[in-house]
Length: 202
Image (cartoon, rainbow, N blue to C red; front, side, top):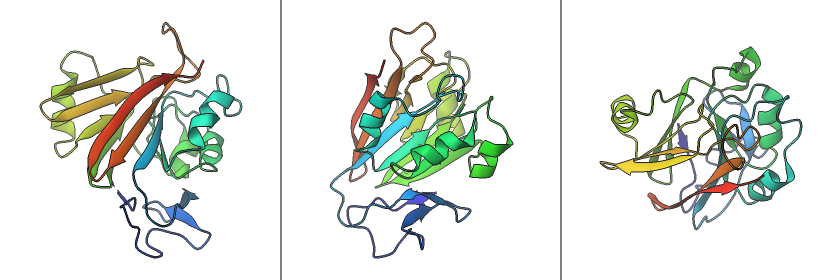
């Protein structure tokens, strides 16, 4: 999937009739951002586990979403209305988690996603497997990726080796044994990942 977050978007490119971006199935994925973009600001979520853990968007999560050009959700959304809610802030790309049902798939989430974000190759999957050998396994699974985003463990992680960066934002709503609920913030500028941070929201 190529999302048109180039530094200058072509007039009308990637924008639906209602002013939203379209995914591969032609469905809207949120409001478009027009004109020149100095950098692509991405909010990364995973494991929101609605409705048990996410009834409405938590205020501290919403603070970050208001500044997003794109939202990535790395699975275990659990109910499609969460994705609809997120799309009110920015275009959304999501993958299926092990707790996601047919409604999330019908919304447009697939098992994996691969995107070109202003020249940066980004892949996404819910479960990256065991910690041992994870970087090698993700390189083999997504040979062209610069960055792989994943979830499932609820454990924040930002790790790099051999030209590949892997990034798990943790969960904003189900921290399990972590000290805080968290989300991820990425900033992409001309094909370079210039910022990657994991921030507490609880």
